[in-house]
Image: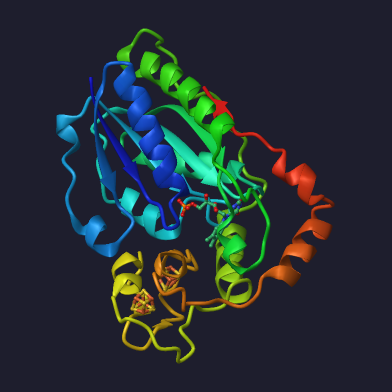
Length: 273
Ligand SMILES: Cc1cc2nc3c(=O)[nH]c(=O)nc-3n(C[C@H](O)[C@H](O)[C@H](O)COP(=O)(O)O)c2cc1C
Ligand code: SF4
Ligand code: SF4
């Protein structure tokens, strides 16, 4: 069986899970190609799905759904009736609208979704002071990936003829979800910036930016284009790109959700069949 794993990953969590799944599917006998669609240049390359028996899609949860630019990219491809599976990495908060809304898109693009999964991943805003899932994904998440690969492989091969069952529909409308997305970008992290600091001008921040927002010469992100993925901050070898402190918003987030840090970090992932 020939599989494609298509993933978006700004700060490596989803990439780590994609690599883990590649290994697990190969152990089961599949041959697996990886397609990274994180950068603008990556998303401009055409992927021919005709060559594959099935496709696995992996995304981080950004404001309760897959990142907007990944959702837009999905709407440009055609599944030709092929089976596919989804997985998400998330930072400890609401994740279910991502499963539902991504399946809606994949169905509209003529894919048949057979399974989904969610795996804890260090929250991106930990880069500014949050403390959610600091050491995830870890071995328990990799074990869950193994179980997901086994169940998904059976569905891809037809040994199990099931497809993905009922998913919780979000109580939020698409318009409300759009508002959360806009709020997050503007308020929580503000824009990554070098703030005039000197650096080696390696250009990595511009190259990794998924939305074409970062200008390595000025070391400043464009407010209109930036999606707050913090890929530039995580990738900067000189560590000169910074955001505002997220420590206060972390306290607010915990108190609003009536959560303790310990409870939050005990969460485990899930498989949906
Ligand atoms: C803009 C933005 C919004 C996010 N929204 C959520 C969210 O709604 N729920 C959640 O649990 N985690 C959220 N996260 C955390 C990410 O889902 C998590 O850190 C993910 O593993 C990052 O994946 P990556 O390392 O592959 O980029 C968000 C992260 C970013 C950057
Ligand atoms: S990644 Fe960092 S060191 Fe490289 S150009 Fe950007 S700010 Fe400078
Ligand atoms: S400039 Fe914005 S969109 Fe680009 S990598 Fe940095 S945080 Fe992500």
